[in-house]
Length: 89
Image 1 (cartoon, rainbow, N blue to C red):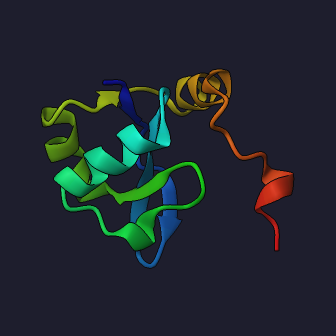
Image 2 (cartoon, rainbow, N blue to C red; image 1 turned 90 degrees about the vertical axis):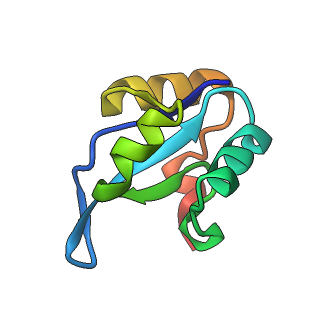
């Protein structure tokens, strides 16, 4: 299993958020998210938005903590990345 989580640097709704991705499959990502009680509504095409306070438990559960650039590099290499141009509308 290779589920990755980056640093919570994205502000929204009065909190900081991180991204949770898989560099293998969306099935793996969804299974990990379900197993750790992440709501389905936090999924955004190729990642889950994760509040800062959830990081310690997700890392303890096996998510690999990486920097944002590394997360994106590995997501692109996996073929799972949805480009920004395809996120609009």
